[in-house]
Image (cartoon, rainbow, N blue to C red; front, side, top):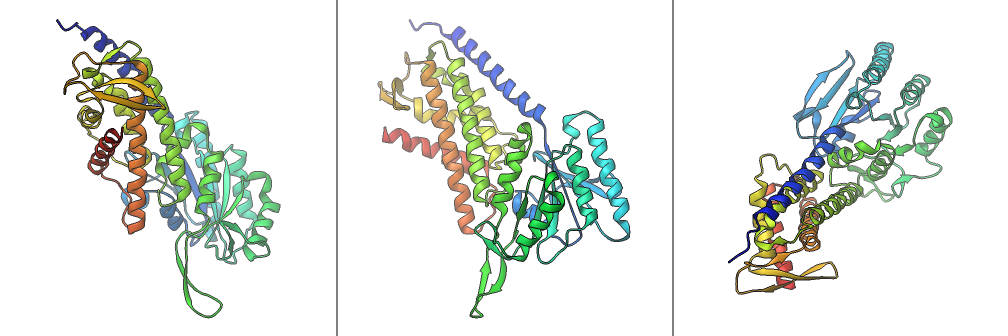
Length: 397
């Protein structure tokens, strides 16, 4: 007679749901990141935002005026809020400055982290623009309110690598800004947000690629509040190499959490046929990984996904040992009746699924970039490729 293992499975399922619930609550409590972007009219703020982030919030989001001069753009299922200030010049300058101060003060006054401004980008055109006293005052005001500020020189032309070429006009402007505002900023970054046509020394037409975006991403991520870094990383466009690396690193942290959670939940031996008791943990893992890569999985039936993904690992097989971090699986007559999966083996299954998903999403993102296609990855494509990847791994064992 087959032993009754329902109690073991119920216990594991209960633990898995508890751990998954805590992970969801943590994400919910962290909330969205809010970035304030300011600068004179024509400095290229919209072009910069489109180059950095995976959504054009000004087009697909709902802009809500929060003051006369500041509009917040956000959308559901996108982890970022952009607070966009009108151009800081002319007769409206004083009104805009007062609105900025009022906006920042209000974000502090509520005492709610979800209302706070978490970072500020102040944009100055790098192609011969000036950095005026009024701009330095705005930067100081933001900094003294506790907001990390980076000054971005947009429309950069002369680079060395991803940064400044010493002796260039952009480098001279950087030095002047550091002299005026160095105590109030986290750095000055030179950026060319989109490709532009130019000529080489012989008059031949050349196209200069975007530059400086990776540096801007690195500086922002470094100084952004710890609880908001994941939201920022999720919002990034994978076309930027640094963004893709940050997404991969964050996704691997998710895999590490899920591996530990699955191991703990399945501390008691788990019948191989009931490996789906861990689906709450594995589903949350795939959901969170997908979020980092911009995969919209709203409404996904995670039990069905985990069934399709995990089946190649356990169908007709029993885990015998873990060697070098990989499953060694042997067939037992086409059935898993009587097969037992230990806590450590459950962790290995979970880790294999998670790491395979990261590999799949990296590959799909790079393929889209190489073809010049939109990098939004359909969940059906991602899950099908994941199942295929796991089948191939099983066959290689």
